[in-house]
Amino acid sequence: MTTTNAVSETSTEARRSLKPPNGATSDEQSKTISDIQHNVLIGDSVKSTPSYQAFQILRAGFVAAPILAGADKFFHLLTNWDMYLAPVIAKLSPLGGHGLMSMIGVIEIGAGVLVALKPRIGGYVVAGWLVGIIINLLLIPAYFDVALRDFGLSLGALALARLSSEFDA
Image (cartoon, rainbow, N blue to C red; front, side, top):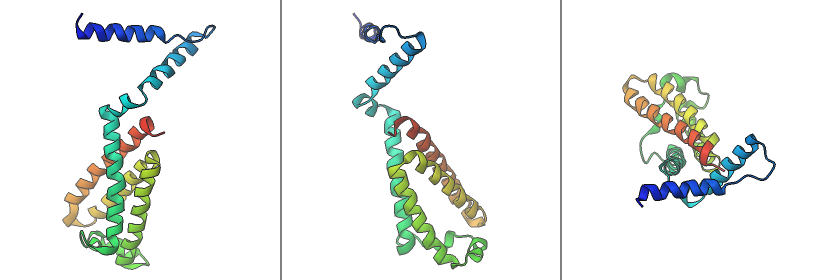
């Protein structure tokens, strides 16, 4: 017997063993079988799927990046973050440019913590935050390349939010 046939026969036998309770309607039978099949996938086999691994990679990245970037708004070890604030936005802020960037740092740290605790919500929050950053950067002609990079990051945050609907408990 070939490996393909063995797997097919094993799958067929497994499906036959998934019998719903007696007296269940066809809809209830389908739901019961679906629930059992879903529960069988939980655990080690799910952790080995590429989509679950992608979820974990995105989650780790979107926890670490906002927290590190937010904290660096206070230390300026990575860059002088104030230069990424559009002058028009800085003039509108009662806090001034540096004060606003400090407040933004606190918000980014909070967004990273939210992704760690509730990635389904945090992914959408980070994606929205990145859209705000993109708008700000488009007001500064020298940073269109950074705006494009942040667009890619926002797509990743959306992917995290979508994958969270499948894998986040």
